[in-house]
Amino acid sequence: MADKGKKGDKSGGKQEGEQPLGEDKKGEDKKGEKKGEEPPPPKIKSVQPKDEVGTRKGCRRYRWELKDSNKEFWMVGHALIKILSVGCLVGALIVFTGTVVHPLVTLMIIMELSIFLFFIFIYTFAINKYMPFILWPVTDIINDLCATAFLVGTAIYAVLTRETMPVNYVVSVALIAVAAFFPIIDICLQRKHFRGKKVKRNVLVPPPKLAETEKAKGGPKPKEEKKGKAAKAGKK
Image 1 (cartoon, helix red, strand yellow):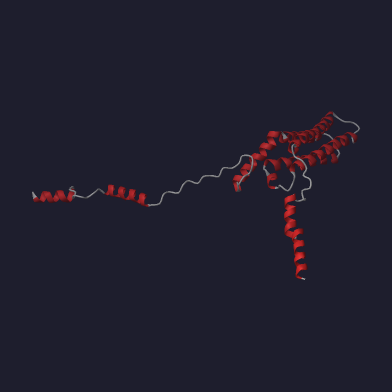
Image 2 (image 1 turned 90 degrees about the vertical axis):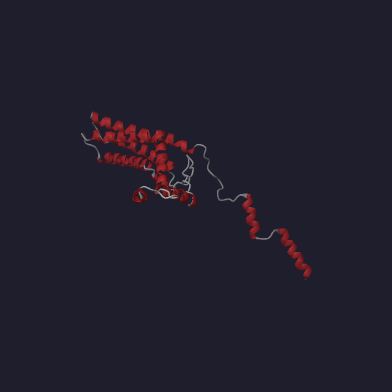
């Protein structure tokens, strides 16, 4: 009988006051959580304005600039007009392949084609947003004026240099003339950037309050000068 009691104590019996290991660990974990510091609050992103860059930096800023630039470029209609101009010029070059053309005509077409592609690349990848020292609406208007003048001149020169014009030659000249018309529409769209903006005059002239403060810092007031002269005369 005694042996059975001993065996029971060794194998399955639990002494009074003992707790299972799992419960001890749970109790210790709960105590550790209570004693430990509170978990740090989650980082909240700063609210950024929708119409401005705000405090965005790095990739976040570039993503915002990319969306803003493409939204303005594609939604307003600048991209469509430039793509149509590029399509007309490419079509003119393709049609010109079957006929003899003056090299100056092809040179002018390739030059205007490269300029249109340059502006599409600049606006699509938001490179203009990182070069604020260039007035891009003004440069675009100047480019449109020059493109219209050069393309009209190219079409006239292409007609004058040929005595006989086949059908494909006439079609290519017509495409050049149409490509010269699209920049005029782009100029009308560019006027949107200048609405409600007035030329600032007398920018370098300080406001009246600043002028008064500068005069006050520069020298004493006339009343103080008179008082100083009167005091010196009394001493003498």
